[in-house]
Structures are given as C-alpha cells and as structure tokens.
Length: 113
Length: 111
Image (cartoon, rainbow over all chains, first blue to last red; front, side, top):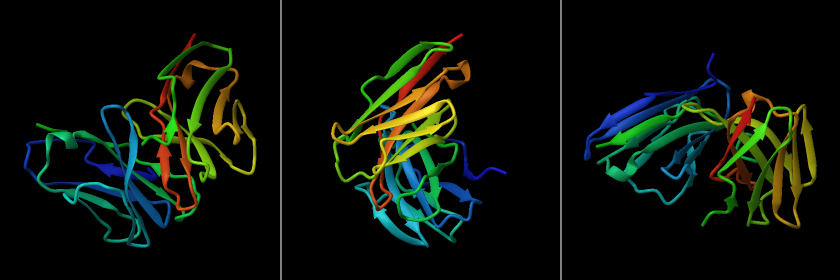
C-alpha cells in the first residue's frame, strides 16, 4: 500500500548511458515532483508536473526529461549520464499545486561509473 | 543560493530531554513551513507544518515555532525518544508549492 513508489531502488550504470527512473503515486494527487539529493545532502527540486503539464523546470540540464503518461506517474529519463549525476533522486506528490504537504517516495540511488 | 539553512549538521540529546532543531530562511515570501524526518535509505516523511499566519503548531510531542521577524523556525521534540533518531529537514514553500529544503540535522537520541 505504498503511497509513492519508485523503481529501481538502486541503479548503477556507465557514463554515457541512458536510463529511466519510474515513479507512481496512489494518493490521487494532482501534482508530482522530482528532487535530487546531492553528496552534500542538499535536496533540490528538479521538476514538478500538474495535471500532466510541466509547471516548474529548474535549471537542470536538458539531458533530464520528465515524462508523465498519466496523473499517477511521473518518470524521469536521463540521457548521456555523467559522473556528476550520481545522487539520490526522490519523487514526491501533493494534492495540488498550491501550498501543500508533499509526500515522498523512498528514493533511487544512482551511481554513474 | 541556499534559501533555507540548518546550521547544525548534528545534535545529540539524552532520552527524555528536549530536542531543539533550528532552521533559518532568507525569503520573506515563504508562507508555509514544514519539517520532514528521514531514516536511512528511505524518503523524507512529513512530520509537522506551520502556516505563516501562525507562530506555533503542536502535534503530540512535536511543536514547531515560527518567528517571522527573525526568519527563523524551530522544532521541539519533548520528550525525546530513541526512535526519534533520524535526519530532520526543514522546508519552506511559497504559493507555487516550490519547496526549498535545508541540508538537514542528524538527531541522535541517546538511551
């Protein structure tokens, strides 16, 4: 009965590869997000989606692209992976895009070799 | 540009005593503040929040205080329990629900 789930939990890959991380929420929320937690433990928002529309796109490289097939899913595609992409990526969701509590997934630990 | 700061990376407290975690922010447009708790290998879990129109919110052992003039908030846990040992993140949001997180404070409650 996990509210926000992510797959895979761990991802180890070579530089230059393309990979995807999947996220699903069963809370019926309208808005989903992707965060990156870097080596300094700093959690920074990357994207948010509201009703399948990209609302916030922070200054992340265009190698990163969110894809939302429906309201319950927000997948993160990463092209041409670089060493600096190694981090923990968290998916989150909230009821709507206003001041609302966000609920987080367990994180995906990406290691680029 | 880090808009939310937690200047204490770690804190140790004896079981039964009060834990006080601090957070400072720079943007006066923030109108919603939250504390999240995170265990190793898990995602952050919502703990307690406060709107900018209040200065205190209490939920059981957890109380959040907001001082808007000082741009400071704090989380009080009393009494502290060993199960409270985790990393605590402070977050601030504006009306666009854009969250800014601090770097976390690792709390250890010593039995």
